[in-house]
Length: 115
Image 1: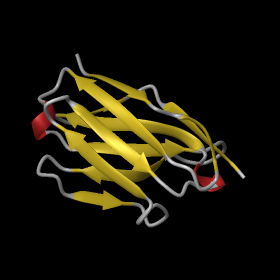
Image 2 (image 1 turned 90 degrees about the vertical axis):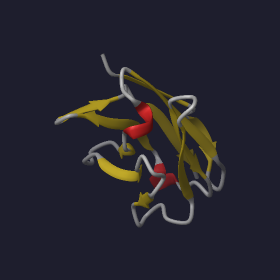
Image 3 (image 1 turned 135 degrees about the horizontal axis):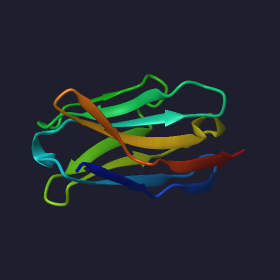
Image 4 (image 1 turned 45 degrees about the vertical axis):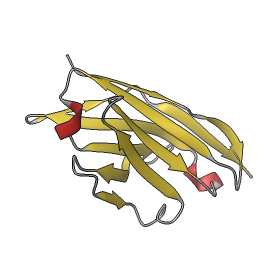
């Protein structure tokens, strides 16, 4: 059974930093691409960043240069380092992966950036 657990969210002032973690189980983590999504109130869920099994990364334009996705295969964990946070980064952040044709999501962690 695939299980994803996010942590690290919280309240931070604009310009601050947070690091999110997502611990995975039930998959062969090292061969899975991993993703971070976010959903703000009243908005659709959007892709924030992704990292392949080989370590290649991609980012939404809105977070390029401020966020960094990374992975530790020994710990079955993917991270999202978020710097220079803005109020518009406020959202619930979700970790996602897939096994076969099925997507798996974590429960989400709230990030709130005050101005």
